[in-house]
Length: 255
Image 1 (cartoon, rainbow, N blue to C red):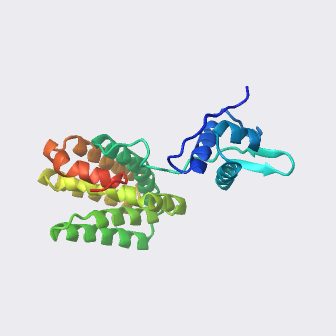
Image 2 (image 1 turned 90 degrees about the horizontal axis):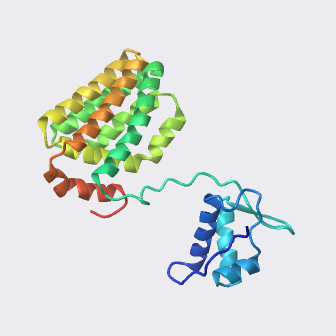
Image 3 (image 1 turned 120 degrees about the vertical axis):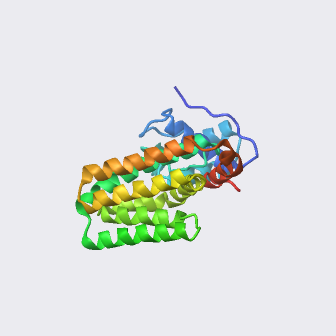
């Protein structure tokens, strides 16, 4: 069945709208890899735009690898790559959004801790112990400890010996730091929460020092599970005063 499109209206860039409509059709499977796109003239007629707009839209799809030109044959659909991670789309600044990001951390941190326990070097252990001390000092000095917390988890990731895991954490650093800021802000309001976090970090580090991958994975998983529980147990006043504001920052909004 031929693909057809409806005219676009001048709001955002017309080329953007045409490119987005074509991309959606490809990603939703209406056009399969190897299919030829409608001719330029047909796209002009269906979208109600100029040839210049259609050419610009196609240029954007080519840049993203979704389509490719074949000399004398037309423009053909390519197998779509995975969509870039965009944490601003489809999310609201909410408690549940923060929990979902901590769930992402749980998957990463458990693997990182297990590998670190199996592969850590003497130098790695020195860096991890220094990270623990830096976090403890920040808390003792009345700081939020967010940067130190993130740094501690990063040196554990370095000890995993997997550069792709480390790159993934670095790629997500802004989001993960935002989630850490929210969890630590909540934990700072209760002495029992703060003490629990310190103990959980200690268990992860002890397992890594002991070279016990299973215990390290279990400790890291428990740490993230407990972080989720602490968010769910947060005083409603915290969410009204701080949580929602921090979540908006986390998801790309303004405080």
